[in-house]
Amino acid sequence: MPETWNTWDTWELLATALDVLAVILVVLGLMVMTIAVIGLVRLREPIMKLHATSKAVVLGNVSLLLAAMTTGDDALMTRGVLIILFLLVTAPLAAHVLARAMYRASGLARGQGQERQCQEQEPRQEREQG
Amino acid sequence: MDLFLQFAALWMLILLVVVLSMVARGPDTLTRILALDTLGLVIVGILSLVSHRLASALYLDAALALSLLAFLGTLAATRFYHEGKVF
Image 1 (tube, one colour):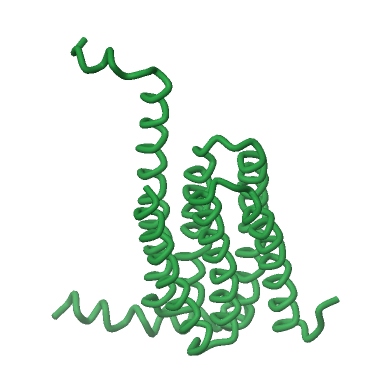
Image 2 (tube, helix red, strand yellow):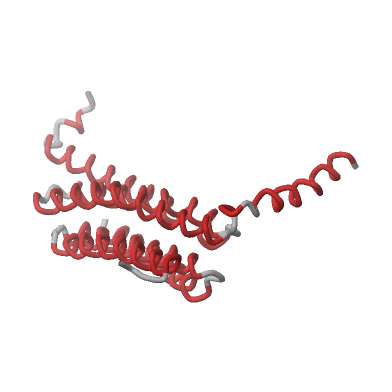
């Protein structure tokens, strides 16, 4: 063991480790939220945008809340656990309702999707032959 | 640590402006509803960063209420879109 470790208190080591963990979790949350917003802006159809945002935003929020819970405050930790559980329950419900509305609005439910798929597949086969 | 959290909050603010522009110029009504849902959850992330920086739980109460209202708002807006009525 190096001599410099003896000068450190155990609680200081723990606090430093919690700070490092908080920084890692905040960076992870920011990256995931940025990916979600990029998917919301760049992808073409509403269902693709829903696919990009509905999962990534919840994961980014969970990461940011876990980072906030490393401060060790009691009230903050209980509210963080509450918000994480609530998000994990309600976000799939909202995504399901939105996806059902998009499915009905896009005409896929009325059998118009198969014609569109055939139209999309024909140029790809031509490209393979040529 | 404070400077890092301020940078993170600034980054989330940039994401908030981008999502707000998506609410404004969404080509579809359902895209606008999806962007509004995302907007509420981005604000929840900003509030969790603020409560992390101040080490107080006051802002997480607002975050809890806001996540509840974003969920109910998405549900109500989507039902109103494809059924014409909320209840």
